[in-house]
Image 1 (tube, rainbow, N blue to C red):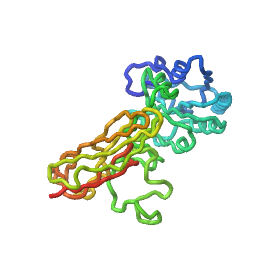
Image 2 (cartoon, one colour):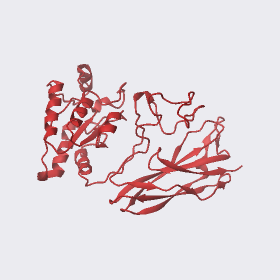
Image 3 (cartoon, rainbow, N blue to C red):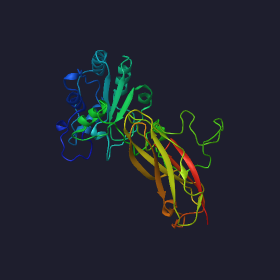
Image 4 (cartoon, rainbow, N blue to C red):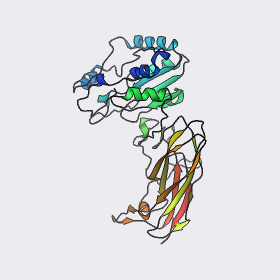
Length: 342
């Protein structure tokens, strides 16, 4: 689906598909072989429900194994495989929760079969929620998250796939490693026994079978360019009530291609009268860096950026230590510290 849920009276068949977009961009210079591969679901009751409210879910009636075999045969004749997978528009949105947030139907089986051909596997996702993608993360040559991009999504996606456009988007939610991590979000509170340090410490807030961190953290997103971050510095080691300061960080484009990056600045109130989030996004800047270029970025944190509502519902900034964290996402950050005095 290109249009997605809550798209008014839009007709999905009038949207430019990713297949058509690839043909439009590639033109006569490439040969495109298409196979359906897999239905988005094989559940007859779910299909009936999804189509009950004006849905346009097209189901291939052939056996699932026959569809997989056709896709594998097509992949074996190609130099690179672009697998478009995800959800139907009716699988997301209001009254459309899912207990399993992996790829529905036989789509993961399809990806595994395509991977077994040995051809480079590019996974294009069309979905309306964060999915659990551990196998895809480990085995795909590349993944492109497109959500439900609208009527011209096919052309836009093709521009990215062919390298005509350098992507720079960042996700505004967190992708878990497994559904057992849900709810998972970047600005969670600290627990009484946070997991850090020695892995064999028993009574800590950690999973036995997974890392605590998400597969893709809030603010994550790659580009055809690569960027490195220097450690941030602050303009003042301490500030008084109502005062602010500047956070400075140098970012360099370490690739041979011009690219845009979203530089993010987070704040942590180390100790508070009420439990404080481990980090909160306070500012960000999207910048264009030429190949090899470096630039110093300045964020200003005001006195209000340090405030929160305490247990008495007072809007206050409490004296103590604060940490500023900068980076390209909420996980891969470096920090500097300052103190708010009384």
